[in-house]
Image (cartoon, rainbow, N blue to C red; front, side):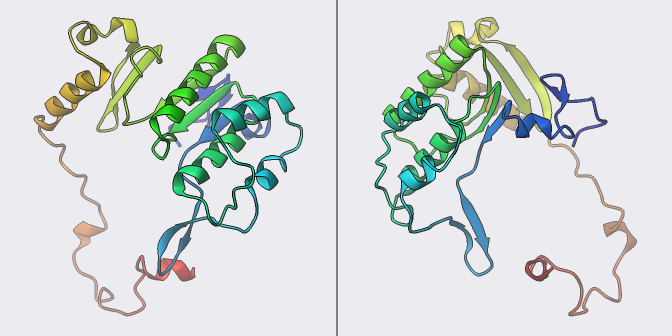
Length: 228
C-alpha cells in the first residue's frame, strides 16, 4: 500500500482502501492461474471433478449474450472436466469467468501466457472493443509484446521500481525506426543491464550481530510458516 489514503486512486476512489471498487465490479483483476499451496509440493492447480459449464453458468446476473460471446471467443468446451484439463484450458475458463461481469477498469497481469497465438490475438481484440465501445480502461502488465504496437494507446516502463516512461504509443520515437515494440523494449532492457546496481538496504536486524538464539530449533523460519 503506497503512501496515504488518497495517493493512488482508481475511478476517484482510494485504490487500497475503498472495497466498493471491487464489490461493485467497477474494478476487475485477472492474474495468476488458479492454484493452491501444498507444503510438500508447492503451488498446484486447483482441481475438481466438475464441468466448465457448471462453473461458468453458476455465476448469476450475467448477460447471456456476453457469456456466449466469451465462450465462443475462448473456444471453451462446456463439457471439460476441470480436473482433467490442460493449463491452457483451465486458464481459458478462468479468463471467461473473470470477464463475465462488465467492468470500468480491468487490471491484467500476464494472463495470456498459457494461450495459443490465435486465442491471444482474439482476446486482445475483444479488450480493444471493450475500450472503444464501452469506454473501459485496461492496464496490461506483460512480457509478451507480439501484436501490441497497434493495440495499446499508452505505455508505462518501470525500472527497478521507478516509472521511467509513461507516454502515448505514438510519442515513442524509437518505434519509427524499429520493426516492432519487442525490439524497442529489448534495447531498453539491454541498456538497463549496463547501469550500476543499487546498493541493497542494510537491515537493522542484520547489523545487530549474531544472537544466542540463532541456533535454537524454535527460531522462526520459513519452514515453520506452514504451521502458523
